[in-house]
Image (tube, rainbow, N blue to C red; front, side):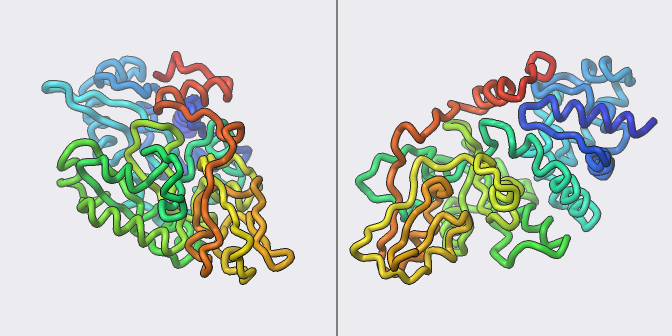
Length: 360
């Protein structure tokens, strides 16, 4: 049965540390059927996260190698899987659902796909995507919110991640596109999902994301912060290639905090909001700016709920008296950050109780 093909793919995707939780209704199978053809799903269901020749994938799937190669190339063009060229041969690798091939489906996002994703998201309450540890994403603070005399590492600064790159691109935020298609979301700027690479010209022949200059990337970052959007990126120290600029009403990860009350859906930054009480006017402008409900003004002075503060720094941009700033959290409240994606995968797999031996 065709449904069995998608069930096998769903199980394969759930074997990836990122996760792809099953549902009672089977909506995840309809979601995959919207994105993959049966032939594509059959191949993806036996793929690994590491690159392999088409012949090896074909052998596991029981498919003719030439047919598999043709289908895999088509999947790579649709950005359903990864592909790399080694000498004159292409090799292919599986991608997670999120962060992975879902985000690359922006050109094909329509009302049906948006509705299927929303149903899946609600039925699983975000599933292992946002409920497992360590989180997928980590908040990056607004640079202007941090005092110049505080130690801050390059991976804690969105602007430094962009400065260190050699090429840059931008795409529409799939989270806000998806929410708009189901009649929800907000009217914040939409084209501000930033990607970058350590080599020149990485996006020169790309339409999505479209190539931009470093100066444009930094400007988009500033405009996103001014619009109240929260910076976040992958939850490790090295190997970054994107910065999300999103909000708790649209972001599939941060909605986990706002909608489902899962405080660990996104990793907090190493900073937290602090108040200079003597200059706080008690105006309450910061309360509206904070999307995590971390601020209150009970007796005319702002108070920070540290358990809710994610350290994004958005509140500091709204304070008319500059009474708010970010300070580094106590070391005991800053969990060790995985060095890179590989270390993150190992930790995530251990915490989910899954083995990487068959998927890598």
